[in-house]
Image (cartoon, rainbow, N blue to C red; front, side, top):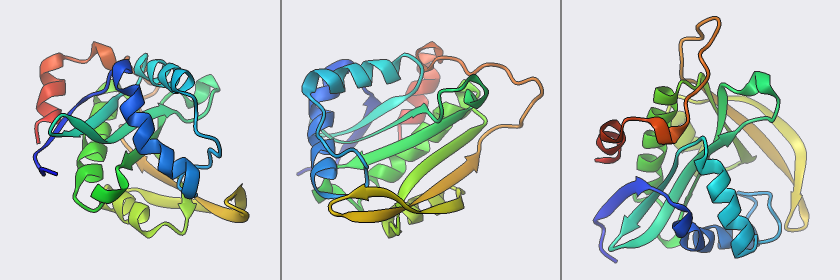
Length: 192
């Protein structure tokens, strides 16, 4: 596979390819605590729902999607509206090539532009590769919840990683939808 990686915003039409990257994580790892692979229709609705407010990014090699990242609501209550939860997945045979790092860097830049104040990630623990990625971007481990999840026949610990993005103005302006960002700024961030 060529190593010429292109980064762009995802569309709902990408959902099948994204789902195929996600599938092995659901079926055989505790990286995600989802235990059943979503149907194509349900996954497409999930992607469409996220795109209404948050960035959803893909990495392509020779026109094939090989990784993706997105942000989503951290908690449903209005008071958490300035905190976004982040996720990144790379095709398993292409990990450790910097794809996830580039996707995460762009995601954080977009969230800052949108006006989010905090980024949070929930990781299975221990998870050395993901921990390294988060420390690289200035996240800190805010705590570990012991035996919080159950997957693949065992109890798993979960770590919460957090990072400040904003200046905590009072009162804070509401984060703007991702689709309203200046397309030139978007393209500049995605051009690594």
